[in-house]
Image (cartoon, rainbow, N blue to C red; front, side, top):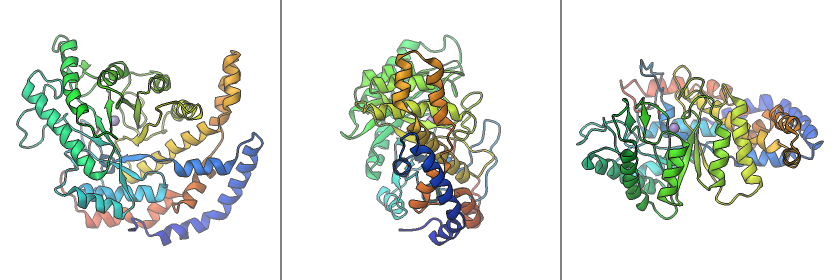
Length: 430
Ligand SMILES: [Mn+2]
């Protein structure tokens, strides 16, 4: 197995912190045991937790106004694989890469798969792109893609999604994620119902091409690039489309794609209840689709979402098993550092949700004890589970302090030399 970061360096850095970690871990274990929790079981769950990293997240994002490229940005999917391997090696919880086409399109997908295999990396959901025009493209997506008024444009968008399924099949992916930028910028511009019908017609053709063991995930988004209406605007339109298409079609929740103050954890609960939760794009936001680092602003919201997910796990809810993925745009940080941090923050929410006393919570809910129900959640949220996460990384040959090891490795300076700026990057915001 190829090493993105020398394992000897990780071991050397871990050595310095291992003694204190064991002390903190034992103390936390003792504290948790008082409420009947086994820290070893929690650590095993942390080790089993898997999150996909978006290939496009490895490059600097940018905004509508400007993009300030970072040093040594990946110039192609092979270099993105290398960066994703760094994130996984140090964090221990991101073994999957989610590719984006055509940005990550290659001639030989078996070569790409082998390259990822050599780093121990697999492939998550494949993402299609019909929200921008590619060089040489016959029809423009300026006025939409799967829902476009012209049949030829819709056919071109469908054909691209079918190609994505085929490329994903070669990578051994198991899901297609579809987000369209289709919508309108002016009242009256688009007939809402006809646009949605055209979308469904196109999506049916894509759905019917799914391999048996695949799922199709639909991502909704309230605005941008369309600023008045979007065809798949909210979770309502999303679940309607998913129900219309069939069992293998599910909704994907991107945390930044809702109206301000929407109760996302309740949406998650509804989707779980109707077997329609396909997956997540984790990120954080303050004003809109900000694509900030996961848990950087609203860690309690992220915890409450995981509270619903763990509740479904605990109840062994039928048809439950969403894909977890990060989807962020990094403008002022090293994307590798942001993605490591974010992966750990998402994993942290999961472990905290596992700490919730579900029997007690259930009892408080049934007896309408609002204060104690809320306190039960807060009690779990307020526990610092960092030693569990660090121990999971140590046992998985990752880093106790991933950012410190990454900085000590000199990886970014090295890529700066190996990857001179190309002037363009296939990274972006989704
Ligand atoms: Mn997204």
